[in-house]
Amino acid sequence: MPLNQIRAITSDIDAKRYKPIYFLTGDEPFYIDALTKYIEENVLSEEEKGFNQMVLYGRDVTIDDIVSAAKRYPMGADKQVIIIKEAQDLYRTIDNLAGYAENPQPSTILVLCYKYKKLDGRKKLSKMLSKNGIVFESKRLYQNELPEWIRKVLASKGYTITPKATLMLAEFLGTDLSKIYNELQKLQLIVKPGTQITDLTIEKNIGISKDFNNFELQNAIGERNMKKAFNIIQYFANNSKNNPIPVTLIVLYNLFTKLYKYHTALNKNEALKELRIGYYFRKDFETAARNYNMKQVSASIAVIRSIDLKSKGIGANLTHSDLLKELIVGILGT
Image (spheres, rainbow, N blue to C red):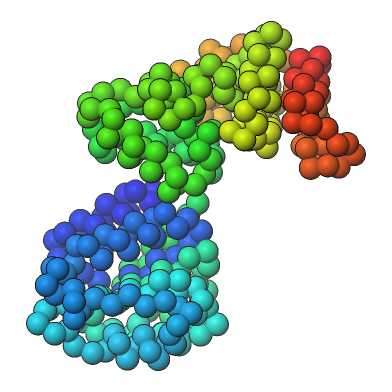
């Protein structure tokens, strides 16, 4: 889990147990930026930073430049910090760093931000980095992992949050962790520590409707509540910028694929655990399972796929409102 790894790395930094190289890689820039900032702010004092902290960019330097800078000695300090941002721009020559990684300068802390790419684990560089430094892979979270991530971030700051509120944030803000983290910071400025964050808190302070969102639409469809579903999609149609149809389709596709797996499972209780249907949502999910048999679930998935194609202009040219209406009528008519 990235948060556990980050805590371990930052704890070592706080205890001055430094590694000579920190190679930060992966598809999720949020963790890479967070660790880089922590090293920038917590290794050297403000007086030491002037001569001993350097930020370079991959597009402006060569591996030889980096090695040359890393081999010099600090001035008036025990350590120097060299940070290479956008190091992925050096991907063609990055393997040339293997010689330095094999025998790094003990007084240098070299940080490489190698975003959106991976090293070849079979090559010498990867092996030397693992032996003499820290290799941190920052993986992008899946949509269904976001609520738990939000809960843990808030818990670390002394807050609790209701399951519905986490879903509202995850659906509205998407998978951009920087964007979500910024919104959570805003909440922390408004809400006192120890307070539980609810759907009302989210609606009041972030502007996400507690009644007109994909979570409520999912429940309305699960209940086969035509009136409620149409009220929600009318709101979506009037606020299309904040309620893009691809997000709605993903939410409903996930619902019906889980229902499909649930119906095919021999042990329903085990299926609920495997599908990660939390206690708070179990009643709603079981209602949907009663209201949609296997044939209806399959038909609903077909409707969602059809609307997805039409939303991309394939086979039709419908408005946002018409796509939503066809989606709801198609599913509830199964």
